[in-house]
Length: 130
Image 1 (cartoon, rainbow, N blue to C red):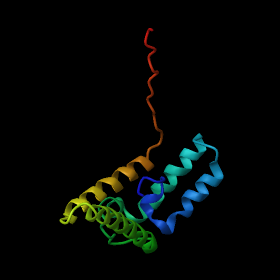
Image 2 (cartoon, helix red, strand yellow):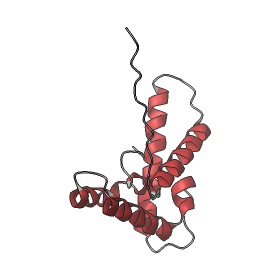
Image 3 (cartoon, helix red, strand yellow):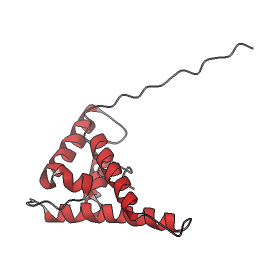
């Protein structure tokens, strides 16, 4: 949900950004693609403030109420999805903990989307002598 793509934190109303990003920069991660991703995410986050994304706090002033509404709805959908899943296995669900998990997930997803570059460490599988 929230980690589906770099623009997921902005909600369904802003899925077009991911589609545009993929259409322009397919087949993969190249420098212009990374720059477009993080500068677009930076600008969208500036419009509503990081707290709207990280903790679901409605901005006092916002250049885009549609963006804030979409983010709040995405957060609500995430809470609902987790709650629904937990209700299937438990009769007592602590909603306050779900909210905390969603806060952390949206904060991490935003942080990942704002990264200028990413380093992926891999290890070569050692060959065992036979």
